[in-house]
Each structure stands twice: as C-alpha cells, then as structure tokens.
Length: 367
Ligand code: NAD
Ligand code: GLY
Image (tube, rainbow, N blue to C red):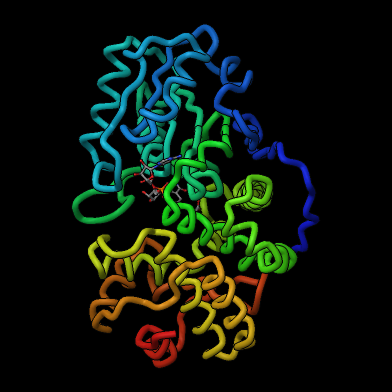
C-alpha cells in the first residue's frame, strides 16, 4: 500500500471518513471550534461538553458560547491517563442523565485522547448509543485517536481493556489550540505522524525529512498539512477495515514494542508517542535482522525521529519483563505474537511469528 502523497499548500482541509450511513467529516482549520458545522450538529437537542480541567480552562468557553450553552452543560474531568477509568465514565453518564439527555442527545469531547476515548465510550453506552463530536486538542488526538471510532477506558489490570467501536458524527481539529500544548506532548504526537509515513507513504516520509525545521518551529501551515495527510491515511484504512479484521492492524506499527516499554516502566517514564517512536525503530531493526528490509531504512527512520527530538533509546528493562508484557499485548493472537514489521519505508506488513533470537537482540540493543 505504499503511496506517494501530493503535498498541497491549503491551510484549511476537509477529510471524509466513508463508512456508509456512519460517514463523517474531519475539519482541519484554525478556529474550527467555532465552526458552523458544530452548531448544526448540536442544534435542537440536549448537549454535554466533556473536557479536562486543563483544556476546559483554555477552550471550553469558545464552544459553550458558540452553542449558547450554560456552564452546567460542561463537565471538566481531572486531566491525565490515570483518570481514564470506570469512575470517570460513570461521572459522564450520570451528568448526561441529570441533564435529561435523550437518545437524540449529543456529547462533545474537547481534549486529548483521554477525553476523546472516555467521552466516546460514554456516547456509545448511554441509552445504547448517542451522537458525539470529537474536538481533539493534542496532535496525537488530531492525527489518531479522534478518528476511526475506537473508544474506551483502562482497568487496573490493563490499558484500554473496556471499549467499543463508536464513530463520531464530526471531527473538528482546530490547529490553533496546539499553541498551548507542551513541547513534549507535541513531539509525542509527531511519532504517530511519522508512523503513517513509515507504514504506507514513502513520499510523505521524504517530505517530513525536508520539513524538519518547520516541524520543530511548530509552523502552523506545516502542522495543518501533517494533520490532513495523517487523517487521510487513517480515514482510508478505517473505511476499508473499520473493525481491524486486517489492514487496520498496520496502524499498530511500533505499538507492540511501545506498549511493552510503557507497561514495563509502569506508564511513568514514557509518553505513549515516545514509546511508539522507540518501538517503531525496534520494529524496523527487527525487520532488517530478519532480512525483510534494508538496514539503511531503519537508519533513516532513526535520523528522522532524532531530528524531531523523539527518543530512540529504549529504557533498560529485564528481557523477561519485556517478554511478559509483549505476551500480554492485545495484539497477541493464538499461535503467537502478531508483529507489524516493514519491507522498508512505506511498506508495513503483518508478520505472525518472528525469529526469537533476532527479537531478543533488538529488545536488548541500545541504538
Ligand atoms: P491526553 O489526553 O492525556 O492529553 C495530554 C495532556 O495535554 C493532558 O494533560 C491535557 O490536559 C493536555 N492538553 C491537551 N490539549 C491541550 C492543549 N491544546 N493545550 C494545553 N494542554 C493540552 O493525551 P493524548 O496523548 O492526547 O492521548 C493519549 C490517550 O489516547 C491514551 O489514553 C491512548 O490510549 C489514547 N489513544 C486512543 C486512540 C484511539 O484510536 N482511540 C489512539 C491513540 C491513543
Ligand atoms: N490507533 C490505532 C487505531 O485506531 O486503529
């Protein structure tokens, strides 16, 4: 599926996710939070805005004012992954019931992937499903979590163990809100952008290499283009494989390794995108070690990750611990682990069963 994207100069973009009656639009533009489309989506029905306290303090008022909603229709949860749990889900659905939302009600998720996943799952479950709008405010949420309908929450025994596929009705990616995002969170989102290039678009990879200066300067136009291209890739894959029966698994490039690193460090050391960056390089190196891909492509990936200041060195962890977490990964299937490897830049593929010695060498090596 290696493609070569034509890079346009348009600052405002629309991407369609084609899923029959559940199709929707992604609007990528400055001031998208005040878009007419949001007012239309919410007109004449009960709405609840779900956000976190950090994002809510910055941007909730824009949406509430635009929709003429009182503050009681805004629920601000404490920020952070540690709050993506059943208690927060209960808080959301309880508020929906208190406000008297009916089956024609609508949730608006304003925040990063944590808020999007939680609110999306509440929308999927409340009265067996109501509409929801995603307003992603992190780069990671704009290019990944707000698109494609995966929603859910964590249990003490594991990440994202409860969830549902539930597509939003609309996605509004307001590029301007990224100006308040921390540098570290911004870079973590870049890992997912690089992932789309790595798995299926060598031309996009070339372009990212050429744009490093603008990417590091957080140039708005460059960011808008990265978000649009990433969303187009995700939309196309989701349209072909909504429930991850096949191709959608390619989006997990670097994630099997990354999840093992995150879990192995008790989710305290690495942001998800940072773990994915290291994991993608491990997947590329394993592909080279197994004779599937040229070593130079792994080196190019390493250089791009370093150029945008993402980590490439895995934290030192005992091999046994990594094996344990790899085996627990949701992508483990009967008969062995399913890895997403590549034949080179832009050509990812699903591989069942990998060379154990090569795997251990990659797990133990520092770049
Ligand atoms: P996050 O939602 O925790 O946001 C990161 C931090 O940035 C938070 O503290 C938040 O308050 C703050 N923040 C968000 N937007 C801001 C802004 N514009 N200005 C200032 N601060 C801002 O983290 P995330 O990286 O967006 O999402 C991670 C979550 O996404 C994980 O739970 C992961 O499992 C999930 N995820 C889901 C999917 C999916 O397909 N559903 C895909 C990838 C990741
Ligand atoms: N984030 C991977 C997926 O949506 O499938």
